Amino acid sequence: MLYRLFRSFFFGNYFYGICAVALSIESSVQLGSRLNSLAYYLIVFSATVVYYTYAYTDKGKPDVNNAREVWYYNNQRLVKASQKILWLLSAVALVFFIAEQRSYLFTIPLYYWSIFFLFPFVALLYYGFQSHALQKYNLRDTGWLKPFVIGFVWAGAVSVYPVVFSTLAAGKEYHFSLFKILLFIKNFMFITVLCIMFDIKDYAEDHNRQLKTFVVRIGLRRTIYSILLPISTVGLGTFLVYAFSQHFSLLRVVMNTIPFVLMMSVANSLYKRKHILYYLAVIDGLMLVKAVCGMIGAI
Image 1 (cartoon, rainbow, N blue to C red):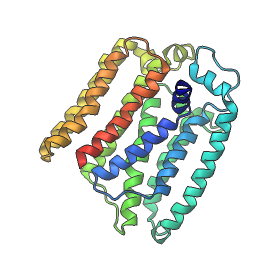
Image 2 (tube, helix red, strand yellow; image 1 turned 45 degrees about the horizontal axis):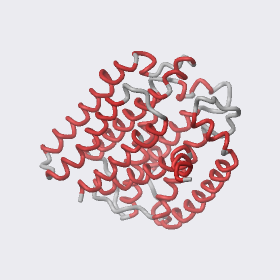
Image 3 (cartoon, one colour; image 1 turned 30 degrees about the vertical axis):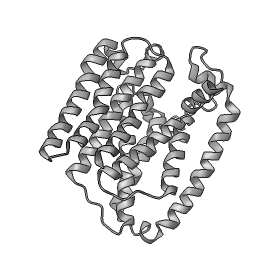
Image 4 (spheres, rainbow, N blue to C red; image 1 turned 120 degrees about the vertical axis):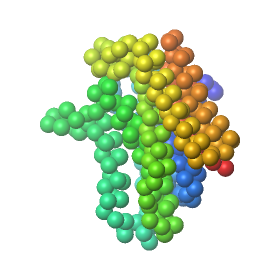
């Protein structure tokens, strides 16, 4: 029973929702912004789960070698019920959120709205439009670009939205700063690296589909040692240079270093074949580790 619940928790993408909320809170804490309302975080959680689950609904007969597809096929009624409940939850939370923020929500400058709609638009392009004329804009089928698209959308959702809304709710104007930009880039590159790791799981399927992901293009070893580890090292080095230049406390430096070290360790482990739950729990779990470490380091 516990194993079934464990599988459902990760296969059903509920863990993604928790990671999105945790990373959103981390951004607010690190930037010294006040936390958003419960309604806001319910929207983040629900929207994340619904979005990731969409790709697995109504897929028909699954590949028996794909444990995730098999789980969705065997739990179609549960998944559809979950999607409906989460849609309803997000709609109710949105009503409360608009009511809470009505004093400023409709006075937001136009350029803010352009920022707000940029990330959902890119997320929509990831799945593609449901028409033959626009199907070519399905970014999900562009292997090398896919990790960067996901990283960009996640970085926007967890780095920009929570801070913008909390700043405006406090009656202040949101301004870009070097630290905010660096936080966005940090989240963008961190999640992009995790997505490249995740593509390793689908190597055989992507190869057969001629989807040119990094691992299909250059092979497993070069992906790990020429892309994953160098990007992680550069990210860590950039953070350390900035941290010491800004005189961050030792605790803050150590806590923000831990996720990078763990990411490099996990990247090294991918040379051997792993079960899908390893990717869902351990690799994606690095997002939660990053959020917790970032919050502790900012205290």
